[in-house]
Length: 314
Image (cartoon, rainbow, N blue to C red):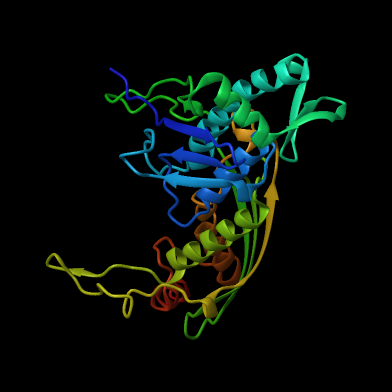
C-alpha cells in the first residue's frame, strides 16, 4: 500500500457576458493563491484578471483539493486550474472555428478575442463565442481539470519515495552585528535568492520571501516556548517574542526563474521554502563575528554570552 500524493481539481465556467467563474478547492490563506489562479485562468483564456470570479474552498461547490500545505499550492492547484481553463478553451475554440471557418488548432485567444493566428482581424469576441457555444449545446460551458502527478508513491512502512513532481531551492546571506558584552544581535541585512520557477506574480514572490525572512529571524533570535510541568509559561504574544517591523533587517531578494517543466507556465513554490535558510545564515554570521558556534535556537543574548564565556575559559 502506498500513500497517494496530494491532488487538486478545478472547474471553470464561462458566461455569456464574458466573465468566468473559477471553482477551486485551493484555499488562499493570505499567500495570494486567489490572485495566482486568476492570473493563470486569464492567461490561458486570453481575458483579463478582472473578468474572473473565484469561488474557493467551499466543500459544497468546489472540487477536491488536498489542502494548502507542503508548498504545493502553485504546483498542484495552479496546474488543475490551468487544465480546467484549457479544457474550456478547447470547447470554445471548437465553436469559434465553425464561425471563422478555420481549424481549432489554428486559433488563438488574446485580448478577450478569439482569432486566427497571424490574422487578428479575423476573429470573434470572447463573449460572443461563449454565447454561440451555449446556444449550440443548450448547457453552460464548463471546463474541468484535475492534477495528480505521476510520481513514485511514498511507502508508509519506510517513508521512502518521491511524492513531489518538483523541488525548490534557495539561499540567504546574512549580515549581523554582535555586541559581545550583552550578547545582543542585530541583523543588518539579508540577501535572499529563491528558485520559484517562473514568477507569475513577481510582487507576491517578493512579499512571500520577505515574510519568510521575518519568520526566519524570529526562529533564529527570539521565538521560544517555555514549559514547566506541562504548563506553557509564555502563551501570549506579550512574552512569545515575534519580531516586529522595527526588528526587520534590510532585505534584498532575487527571484531565480528557471522554467520548471512540471509547473503551470513553469512556476513552482515560493514562501515556505524561503524560511529554511534564514536562521542557518544568521547562525553562520554570528559564528563569523564571534568565532563561537551556537547550536541552540533561538540564539538569545544569554546563550551567546554564555558561549563567549565558555570559550574564554578554554
